[in-house]
Amino acid sequence: MKLSALLLVVLGLLLARPPALAQTKRSPIYDTREHILEGARREGRLVVSPGFEESTTPHLIEAFKRKYPFVREVTWFKPPDFRKQALELRDGKIAVDAFRPAPDVWEDYFKHDLLRPYDFRRMATAGHLAIPEPMIDASGMVVWSGSLMGIIVYNANRVGAGAPPDGWNSCLDPQWSGQFAADTKPNVLAALAPRWGEEKVLDYARKLKNNRPIWLRGSSQGLAKLAAGEFTFMCGVYLHATERFLKKNPALPLKKAVPDPLPVAFHEPEAVYARAQNPHVALLWIEFLASAHGQQVLDGVDPGRASFLVEETLAHHLAQGATLSVCGTGCRDRQDNLMKRIAVDAWALPQ
Image 1: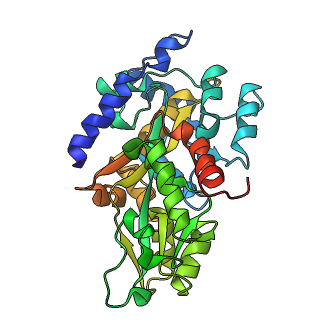
Image 2 (image 1 turned 180 degrees about the vertical axis):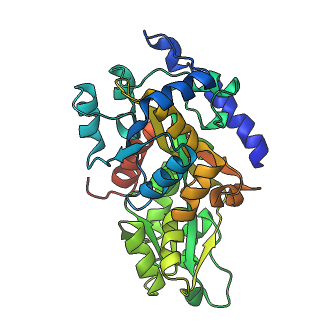
C-alpha cells in the first residue's frame, strides 16, 4: 500500500472508532492559536516526562527552547516504571505537564481521567496546532510522535554469493534452519497482527519455532552476535536499533531487508496531564515533537525512531511503496497480550 493511500486508511480507522472524548464526562477543550501562545508566554516553563532515550531528550529540549525563547525553563525526567508512574499520576504525586502514556496500562489513563481532554483533532483541523491528523489517537487526547519499524537484518559475509533472506518466509525456509535468531520478546511479530490477524501470527510463530531459531533477548545482544557471525540473520529487529548499532560500527557487514508486510507501530505517545500547571507550553511541546523540525532532530539523534508519517524521516523512506502492517489504536494496547501468547503458547518459552 502506498503511503499516501495508507494515510487515508489510518485516518479512516481512527475516525471510525468511538472517540474517548465523547465518552468522558469532561467537556473537550478547544484552544485557539492566539490563546495557546498567550498562555504559553504567561507560563514560561515546562515539566515533561517523555519516553525517548535519555541521550535524545536534551537535543529535543534545546531545539524547542530555540523555537520558543519565552520558555525560560524546561525540566524533564524519565520514570523507571511506567505502571508506577500511572499510579502516582492518579494520586497527584507527580508534577508534570506533558508525559508519555504507556500502552500496557492505556485504559488506566482514561479510567482515572489522567489526561487533559484537549481535542487535538479539532484544533489541528482548524489550524491552531500543526499536527498531522493521522498522528492523533482515536481518543483525540494523545499524539503519537514516533514509530517502531521492524525489519530483517543479515550478515552479508555469512550469506556469501547466494540469495540473502528477504522476508518472513525466510524464517520458515528449511535452508536457514538453525541459522537465524528470534527475539524472545516478539514485539516485531506482534505488530503484524493488523495485516495478518492474530491467529495467522500465532500460526506463523509455531512454524518459525519448528525451523529451529536461535533464541535471544534484545536487539543490542542480537546485532552484536550477528556481526560476530554466530548466525546468518535476525528474524525481526527494530530499524532504530539497527541504525544505532551501525552508526557505532559502520564497517560491519550487516545489511537490511524490508519484509512484506513491513510492521510499523505507533510509538512515543504524548499527552497533557490533567493537572498540568503549564498546559499551553505542553501543547507547543507536543506540536513541536510532531513537526518536521522536531522529527528531524529526533531522526538525527536516534535514526529510525521518528514517525513514518512525516516526510524525510528514515521510516518514511522505507515505508514508500511497502505493504504496511500498522499497529496503532486497538493494537498497541493489545500488543503485550499477543506477545505473551506468541512466546508462551506458540513457542513454549518460560513465562
